[in-house]
Image (cartoon, rainbow, N blue to C red; front, side):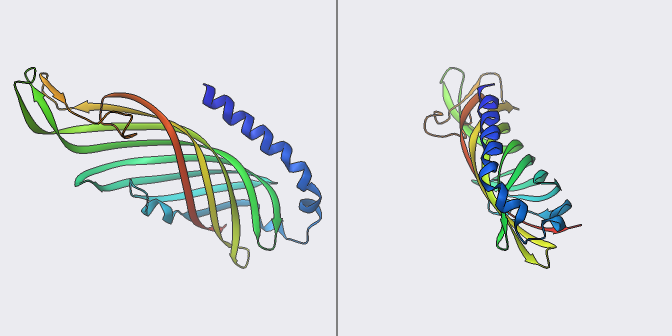
Length: 218
């Protein structure tokens, strides 16, 4: 709950900070009316994420505000272990400064990531009687929130755009194990050393994001 309060405070500060830019926004010779309405696009930065995904987005701008939804299908291998899942990121943006070079904005976003990993690990069996490597299913769900700052840059005739933002926030990772014998205990790194701990349970930690996307105005 405290993360929600922090995000709300960030949104309030971002909104009030608009006042110092209002004159430039209202009287600039930039045809921002062409930026109203829907845009659709692809998110190449999802291809260089640790959890590689094929991600698209759709956004709708009204006035100086914009809502955006990113959704991606995740599939690949990590440390030779195949995984699949999905990622959803809703975003709310407030545009503050716009000129011929681009439109700058602040915003907040949320992140939901679901992963199913075909994993293997070392287990102790029957109260440390012996150790054994077993295959098992690792289920991870991340839920987080973040603040962001970015720029939307026109590429061609005010219809094609490059969108770039950086973000930081907090997330909670919940991990569950499946297909493990009742007597087996997984040996894993302590959360202090790894934010992606394989230990069953919940873990909170900070997150950082870099977003790069290309979109077209409809």
